[in-house]
Image 1 (cartoon, rainbow, N blue to C red):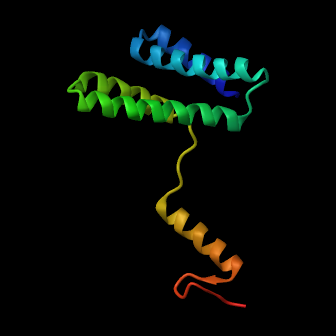
Image 2 (image 1 turned 90 degrees about the horizontal axis):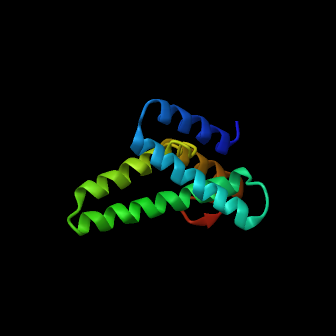
Image 3 (image 1 turned 60 degrees about the vertical axis):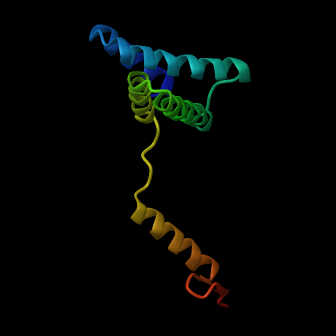
Length: 121
């Protein structure tokens, strides 16, 4: 299911459940995606969708930090809630063990011994 369709379905659920905060965050996501689609004058592909979502995550993190520094924890909590909702639409980050295994496999393919920092031919 395309991301915009998934967001629309969740918006309907939020409306039925009278979840105003969630509905607002979903509208924010949908608006950002549609704006990017209109600006680029083409259908969004998955990479563009992820780019938009990552930019929204970054904005929420920065806003929450600024609200905390400004002594407004209630607004920071609102930004954090929106951040968590946006992250549900992003793919899960790999675990540290998976990253270590991928790096080790890449190093083995290139012939680099990570302990000696020298090429092994």
